[in-house]
Amino acid sequence: MATERFSGYYKNLDRIRAFVLEAAEYAGLGERAAYAVQSAVDEACTNIIEHAYGGEGRGEIICTCIDTGEGLRVVLQDFGKSFNPDSVPDPQVNVPLEDVKVGGLGIFFIRKLMDDVKFEFTPNRGNILTLFKRKDARS
Image 1 (spheres, rainbow, N blue to C red):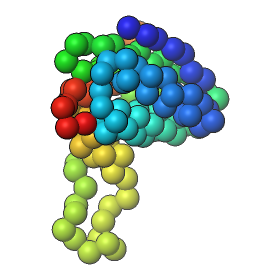
Image 2: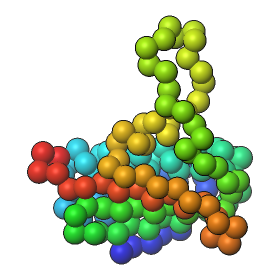
Image 3: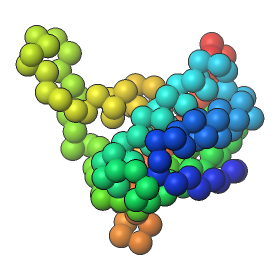
């Protein structure tokens, strides 16, 4: 298990991606699975900075990576505004572009990339997003 704290700045997304990639490689994820984890974490951290904190420099992101033996679990914790991703419906994909509602694609993207996504909020622990990616021989 490895935990790192990052200030909520967009410039730190590269450091977060590198931290997660190292954990994915250590956990034995293949190249495709590791890229999926990096992409999902990048999207989630961007959302934390933009939506939970309402901009840069207003809080930190705690990233914990756990090798479960079956894959990699990434836990992202922040203390920004609470948000329930289950309240965002999947985007409409078979409608004209002008009828597509703005927003919600990031969460859809994260769910498609990861094997399991869980969110919880508690007043004393903040927002906790848990992402899991299974090892795959085809990765």
